[in-house]
Amino acid sequence: MANVIFKQGTRAQYDAIATKDVNTLYWLTDTQELFKGEVLYGKGTEATALASGLMSAADKAKLDSLASGGAIGLTAVDASVILGSDDNGTTIGVQVSKSEGNALELKEDGLFVSPTAASGAVEFAIEKQSTPEEGFSATYKLKRTAEGTGTYVGDAINIPKDAVLSGGTYEIVKTADTPYAGAVVGDPYVDLVVANAEESHIYIPLKGLVDTVKAGDGISVTNNTVSVKVDEANANGLAVGADGLSMAVATATSAGAMSAEDKANLDAVMSSIVWGDLGDEATA
Image (cartoon, rainbow, N blue to C red):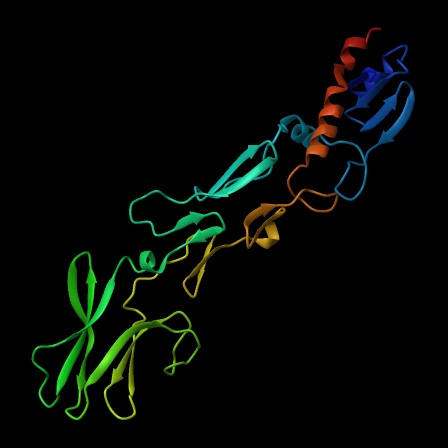
């Protein structure tokens, strides 16, 4: 490929050149004109994402700053986002704090918080009291144990003298308003079975007694499910799906990551440009 000679300067410097080289492109910075030798090729309008035109100074600075696998225009909002590059181009990752006690984990298919970790390894148990409250055949209390310390929470469960409990289990609500009014999907509760002919149930909601995970920047927590949020209005090709975060390749109408083909084309253009100054030829 033959070298392209590109020179820039003012209109006055261009006019001072006695003989213009027909193989040289002259860019006049004050009049925004482009000449090939003495032939005017373009003037004025800068290129946009939707229309061709001349390269602006800002676009030239962006081209000069491009590097293989770079993440031009992308800035990590905080330490939870990692920008990098590999042989395939730009990479965007999620970083999880290594601080002790962090319940959030990064797995192959995304972020994860286990029910045990979310509750801070808290255990609940129904304990029968050695002495029932007056007027009842048995009294049970809900005991919360965390870090080896047990405390009773909630009201006592008193069983009338004509009925006793046959069992009890720790459950999670799967259907709204079932098995009790106001139940929300994902809420924990205790299901006690009374030893009577109807095998009646006593439901004890535990919402508020179990520690929950709060969403931070870029994180959404819904019904104990943790996911990454993406600002769709400013995503610039960034998306999140079942397999995790992804970055689409940029097109003529939408922002995104630079493809290998575009990078190769850009390198070819940059390597063929020779920069000069019209001032060197002002007296020629």
